[in-house]
Amino acid sequence: MMLEGSCNCQNVRFRVDGGGDSVAACHCGQCRKQSGHYWASGYAPDAAYDITGEVRWFEASPTAKRGFCPNCGCFLFWKAHAEDGMSFSLGAIDGPTGLRLHKHIFTRWKGDYYDIADDVPQQED
Image (cartoon, rainbow, N blue to C red; front, top):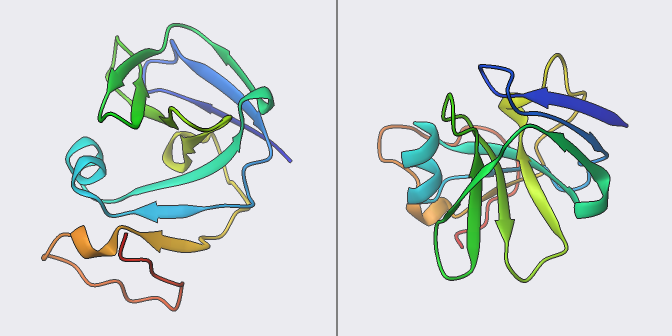
């Protein structure tokens, strides 16, 4: 399955082949601060991506970095340094994704202003 996405200003565009095998909603503090709520993402191997435009990377922690558009600020990617793949923002996909959430992660850190009200598996860390 080929998905296409972009940032708000269209300066960064990407295509990813796949990404539906590990669809997650991350509730960690960094994702909540960056996205304004939790961050929903798909995951694919690095070779599955075709990215055009400049992506700026922020070293979010000793283990991972976050990719965003330097023009409009859209948070598009999350990449662990030790992995040969990365996550992409489901909200950045242009059009329907056809994907379904597989898990909620870092639920121990979720905001106190909402409940997780679905039957999708939850992981505290």
